[in-house]
Image 1 (spheres, one colour):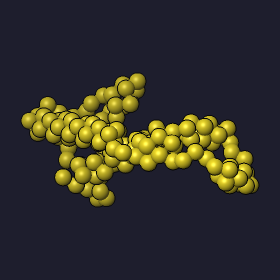
Image 2 (spheres, helix red, strand yellow; image 1 turned 135 degrees about the horizontal axis):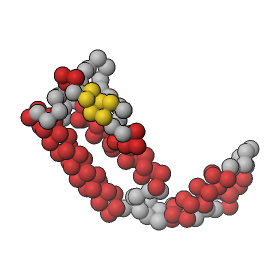
Image 3 (cartoon, one colour; image 1 turned 120 degrees about the vertical axis):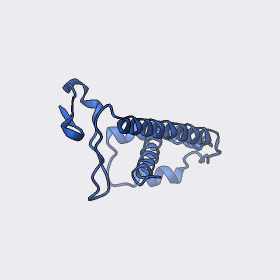
Amino acid sequence: MILEYAEAARLYVPLTRLDLVQKYRSSEGVKPVLNRLGTAQWQKTKARVKKAMKDMAEELLKLYAIRKTAEGHGFAPDTEWQREFEDSFEFNETEDQTSAILDVKPRHGVAHADGPAAVRRCRLRQDRSSHARGLQSGQ
């Protein structure tokens, strides 16, 4: 793969390292500023991105520390009414759904703010995309 920079400078990326390349996304109609590789402007851009990544990592660490120590809500064990309610559904759960239920339900009684892994991943994506929008708008 070839990445093109200002003044037709090219960077060749081996196909085995395509995991390092991401599509640039911006607001509609906004073109990215292209820098020539190795210039002072390129170094500034790299330093700014590096600092932004460090700041994001620090924010995430703080966020996880807060979530880890925050008080959550513990639910009461299932009652007969809950079981009747679940049994009244017209369709049976898939194997994956049953597995997820068996994984999550035992933790419902624990008063902890840090939810199941799937919820944490969703929150992380939301946090990252919010941070990325801030970077694109220059915040």
